[in-house]
Image (cartoon, rainbow, N blue to C red; front, side, top):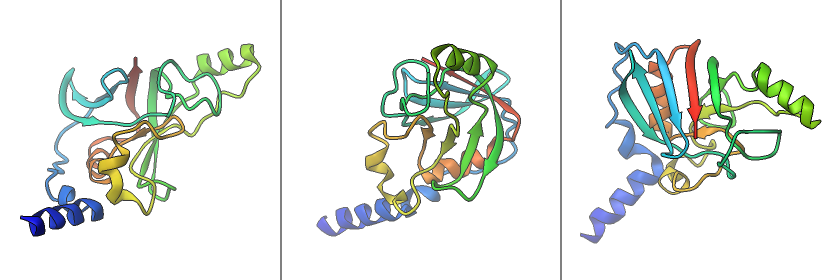
Length: 168
């Protein structure tokens, strides 16, 4: 029994256990992404129906809308997934079009920099096998984090130009 447990821990840490269990079917047309911060979930949707869901981690200060660079909040509102970044400090990343016009105006009123570089991404490069621990906490600077295996699936299913709504 001890050998089985040690083997499972090793598989989890190297990321081998989760990669093969995900169906990467690319015949699903994802037309919307919904993120519910209160549920810590990301939903891939087709014609209003959820076809995939993922548990996510947010910025270390997740309550409320992102106001400025460094506040460690994840923005709320309607955005576009406007480009994919394969070579990132994190395992793959899909950029969210934050800040939008309203975000920029609000930051200007407050006299602050709204920040940017908000993305859906996998784990920090080199520590992907620790996702079973890191995903228990809100640890990003405002991004939306999933496991590397989940990021592979999202990367395959979500096209550039897909709308995303992030809500509390």
